[in-house]
Amino acid sequence: MVQTNKIELGKIGESIALETAKRRGYQMVATNVRTPYGEIDLILKTTHQLIFAEVKTRTSFSFGYPEQAITALKLSHMIQSAQFYMLQNNLRDEYRIDVISILYDSNKHQVANLEWIENVTASE
Image (tube, rainbow, N blue to C red; front, side):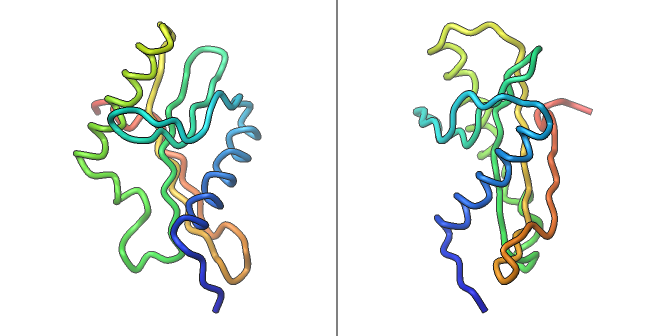
């Protein structure tokens, strides 16, 4: 069995997420942007809005689905980070916060499952 450390797995997940974003027609604005509230994994752009994306990658469902790692506190930090970035860059574009959940098979070096959850802060 191939072991993949946490940092390496995170980088693999971000690379997969970025390639998926490009296939969707999104443009990359920035990666791994640090704010006082945490790090923004990916900042993407469509014709109409910015997307602040959190990428969660796991090699199994042993500890639940990757997106289950987004706690209320983490979500709050994601919102604050996005707002900080918008303010710092004097942006008034519409934006949303997405979560990209990846199950990665490290033995086969391929994606086993990818879920792109759009607008996680929208109330339903």
